[in-house]
Structures are given as structure tokens and as C-alpha cells.
Length: 451
Image (tube, rainbow, N blue to C red; front, side, top):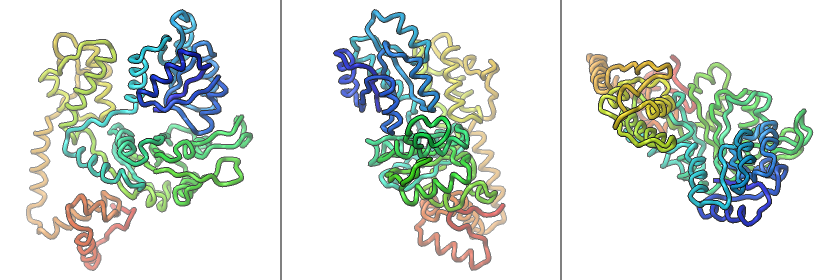
């Protein structure tokens, strides 16, 4: 947690700073709003700003918005500053902390900000296998590509990789490539010099430099323009970047994690994604299964969200009833974990009595969940269908299809495919050589078989 305290460090703010450091925060100080902007432009970054309520918080928020710097603000001041506190909240501050500071209040605010990044909650074996692989490769500096449907928790697993790595004490910086207009994304990634373009009022350090020594998450990288992909590839290969309007390269030391809910091999074939960049990013592929394929995680996550939102809303912690649990596990959850979280937040607010009943498990429009067959029934039907499809085929044919389908899933990554199949890389290579000799198309690294 990086905390930037803005304001004159009198006795109370000094105490607040010490409490935050005791709670594990890395604390930086700025005298005023302009000083805070200089810190944020410089790349030192912050996960939270604690601002003296006497400063013009509305103007600070406007300046942050103009420079596209997104960071939450909490105001702080003596208890007699009630009018200023109300004004700060109306301006956009997330919270108000009265001074002298209460250690538990500061701890709660820091914990709330940290919680927003997402905890890694899982119980299902399918997710456990992904987490195991993530932890196995986390200590390395290898680039990682995390794929899966929207809402499956790709950023959560990326943060877990960072926390499990040797870079855990350094920044974890995330940027959503789909949320930033194409003409601004280059500046956001690589920074710019003063006057490089209209609106560049000062030198601004980009996400690459801000993440120096740590991890940079490129969320939804499939949405990045091909021209910018070339500059990204150079940054990854040579570990240097060029600020927009800059005259000399800037060295950076970061670990790259990228996410996508699209098949990047298809994007390569369509010409919207560079094949050489895919090779660089896809050293290890973590494919997150959808929530409907992780039935044990549905109830684990539902219980976690129920407890979290009960506490957040000052409501009693209620268990989930048997009927409600059945409804949750029977729902297909097309929106995955994100949809489940919103559903449980709504259920906590609608529930009455001693339990969260099935009547509280509702869609946003108030209608009940569209409960489908339970996971056990679906699993039995799937198993029967698979068995019927195998009748009449040889073991060699089935083995070949399994190996090639797994390799296709791994975008041609032999090492990853061998781990999933539970065989040695030498055995896999021998099998693939045999298939190629037989005239079978075998995908190379970064490739997928043609449909």
C-alpha cells in the first residue's frame, strides 16, 4: 500500500503517518496539491491520498481528472471542521478521517482500499490447478498471459502472482488497454515530456516507469492498436522505453503480465495482433475456467461476498439457506465472479430473517435466478456424451486428439501442454514428431490449429 499524505505535517498528520507505516503502508509526503501532482507525475505513484481538509480537494480532484490520474482520496482534519468535511465528501473524497487519528480507523481505511484489489478465494480443483501453476512460475521474471472470460478474476490472479514473486515489495501497476482512447494510451504507458502534445502541461511518467522494479499488468491487451504493439514489443525485448516527445531511451526493470478475454491466436490470424508480441507475452499461459465450471467456488465465493457486504453495510452476518445454495449452484453465471458478487451484494440487502433465503437471490430487475440443471446433472450428461463419442475409436486416435487439443489450448507451448497432460516434454515431442511424420498439422509455439 502506497500512501501519499498531502498537507503540512503538524503533530496530528505526523501521528497519522506513523500509524499508517506501522500498518505496513509506504508513506510519502507532499506539502500541497501541486506537490502531490509532482509526486504522481514522477512515477512514485500512490494507492491512496490522505489530504488535509483545509486544502482545496475539489481543485485537486479536477487536476487529477485532467491528467487522467486515478487514485482515491480520503480527507482528514480536526473534528471541528464539520463543514469542510462535508464539502470534501461532496467534492469526491471517499471518506473523512477525524484528527487526532484513531489507529483502527486508519487501519480500516487502508484495509478497504487493499480489499478493492480483490482477494484470491477458491476451493474448486479446476481453479486450484491454475493457482498452483501461477505460484510455480511467480518467482521467475517470465511474462504471463492470463486468459478467460470476462469476470473470471484475471486481475485477481495477476495480483496473486505479484504477491508471490520476488517483486512483491515493489509496485503493482495496472492499466486497462480497452478503457483508454487509442491516442492517449501511448502517453499513459510510456509517459510524455512537457509540450509533447496539446495538454501536456508537465513531464509525466508513464505506467512502465511507475512500475519500475515491480509488475505491470496490461489488462485486455487485445484491444491495443497494432502500431502501439510494436513499441510495446521493443520495450519488453530491450527493457527501455521512449517517452512521447522524449529524446533518449529510459531503462525499465519490470515483469509483464497481460490479460485477454479473446483468443489472441485468432487475433494474430486476423492481423489485429502481432505474432511476435504474442510469443513474448505467452511464455506461460494461465487459463481461468468460467465460474460455471467451478461449482465448489460458487458457494465459497457466495459466502465470502455475503460476509463482506454484511459487514460493509452494518448488517448481521446471515448464513445462506439450503434452497438459496441450490439456486446459486444451478445458475450458469454468464457474468462469472463479477455477476455473483453483485448478486450477493443485492441478496444481503434484500434478505430478512435468520438466513439469506432463495427469495433474496434475485436478478437486477428483481426476477428470480434462471436456475438450470445442477452441476452434478450436467456433469453426468457431459460424461455420457463424451463416452458415446469415443465408442468405435482407437486408443491411439483418442490420445492424438487429446494431445493436439491440449497443445492448441496452450497456443503451441510444449512445456505447458506437457505439464497439463502429465507427461515429460521429451515424450510430448516424440508424439508430435510422429504425428507430423503422419502428415498431421501440429501447431508451433504461439499458434493454434486451423478450424
